Length: 95
Image (cartoon, rainbow, N blue to C red):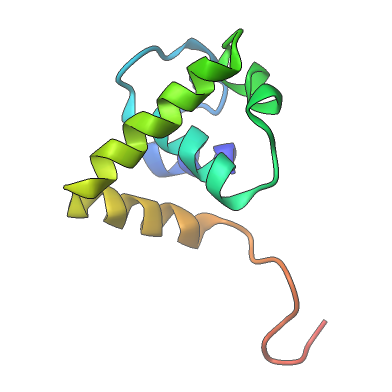
């Protein structure tokens, strides 16, 4: 998940540890991790170099607010989702 976001923005995945407030890539990475995986806020702390679950929640909330009025951001999320490995049953019946 984080690797797909980092690849999309052409940054190192470990840069999420160093980025601070306002980095769209970091906010999107947290939002997608929460949206598409069963991880808890506490489990995301280390990936973002944070110390409190509310800090991760702030990243997610910032993206939620931005999504309301931004077609560009919704397109960014779709582009990142296409980079993610496909999981689950093969719709074509293969394994």
